[in-house]
Length: 333
Image (cartoon, rainbow, N blue to C red; front, side):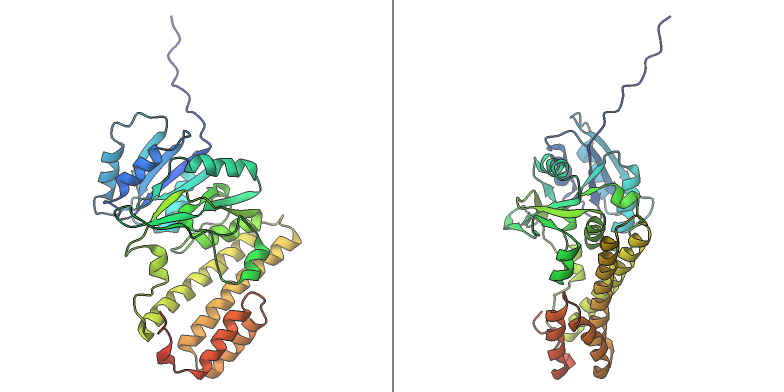
C-alpha cells in the first residue's frame, strides 16, 4: 500500500512584497503586474484596506490565472484599519524576513526586490533600506527622476544633527519584519518616520541612490495630505500645522515606547533615541505655539529649540515671526 501523497513544501521566501491598497482601483493592476515582474521569487501579499470602491475586485482580476514563480494571495481587511495598523497586520501574515512595501498606486521596477535584498545581505545591520524614486503622473509619465532620497547611510546622530525631520520615503522601503513584529504596534496614519527612527534605534538606515520605483503623484498622496500646501493663506497654514503637530507627537510617543521595549539597548542608543523623541515633541510644541498661543508663550518653546543643535535654524526663523501678523503665516505656501 503506497504512502499517502504529502503536500509540496512551501518554498522559503527571503522577501514578502506587500502590495498595500486603499481606493486604488485604477492603478492596482499595474502595481500587481510590477510585483509579478520581480526577478527573484517572492511572496506577494496584496491587501486592500476595505476600500469599498472595487479595488479588491480589481486586484482579484489582476491575479486570476497567475502561474509564475511567486506565491501570490489577495485579501481584504474586515474593516478599514488605516496604513499603520494595516502594515502591522500584514507583518504578522508575511512569511518573508524582509517586507518590501509597494503601494497600490506605485510601480516597482523589475530588479527592485533583487537589489534591496542584495543591499540587506551586504549590510546586515541595516533595518530599513529605501531608494530614490522617479515621480510619475497618473499616466506613468516621469515628472522627476531619482528624487526623494537620503544619504547612503544614516544613523541617530545624523537625524539629530540635521533637524529637518527627514525620513526614508515609506513607499520605497524594504523593512526587516522584526521592526513591526518585535516592537510596539505602529499607531497613527503615517509610517515612514517611525520606521526610520526604529531602524536607527536598533541598527542603521540606508538609501540606494538608484531609483527603483515609480512614485505616483496625485491629489491623494498621504504625504501631500499631511503637508497640505493647497493654498497660501492662514487657514491652510493652520490646517497643515495641526496635522503635523499630531503626527510629530505620535512619532515621539512611538520612539519612547520602542526605547522602553528594548532593555538591552546600549546607553548611547537609548540616549539618542530619547533625544530624537524629544526633538519631535519640541517641534510639535513650537508649531502649536505659533497658531494657538499668545506671542509671549512662544518664547519658552522657541528658546528650547534654539538650545537644540538640530532645531536652531528653524527656531531662529520662527523667532522672526514674532514681528509678523499671524495672518501672513502661510503666504509662501
